[in-house]
Image (cartoon, rainbow, N blue to C red; front, side):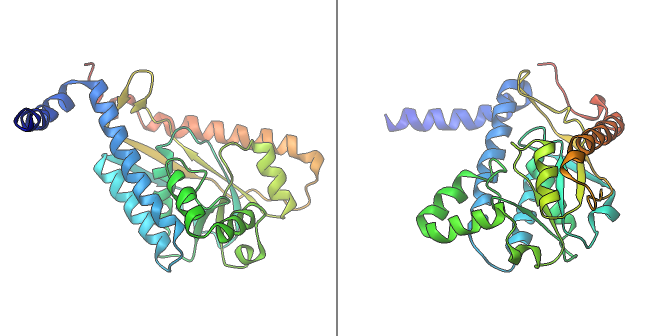
Length: 260
């Protein structure tokens, strides 16, 4: 029995490169598994409070991108390095965009700028389940207080320096704008180009390139609740135009897309 098991294991590893090169479905699931496992392991860093936590998360996120041959090109870096705290509105498309957020962290390492989530990375799947579970086991009271503090933007966070605050992906633009108005914070759209290299229906997950465009900050001073709808439409239009513009740069031919 042991001999047959060893033969099967050896055969699998021998066939692995062949399957990866010739079978798109196998390659899709294999690369997705690598992403999910490594991202989940990286997410464990989010539950511990230490000085270099953000840098470590950004570093490992960049290593995952390199391993999967994903390139992130940043446009509008001067807008990213603003010294003001603001709320981000993103055209979140897939889980792969979490690596793009890690790349933004990586680009900001030398600046006094942090990117935080109102649920302590828990809305960034797969940077989610393990921090939630272990935080409950290790320090449930502190975790709940921290989560609620992030949700309502505690004074400690507001006074800690310039931040980009990520709203949950389930929130609509109007809800995010309402939240920003309540706390008198400006809004910054962050746009990801189309991820041509990943398609769940076609089982496609290839090396690729994504442009991240950080747009100028939009002021909310002087706005009232009645202005939310118009501002939401204006921001959505700007995001759509920018998305179309940067997506034209990343052509389908940029990526390895075998027809197998």
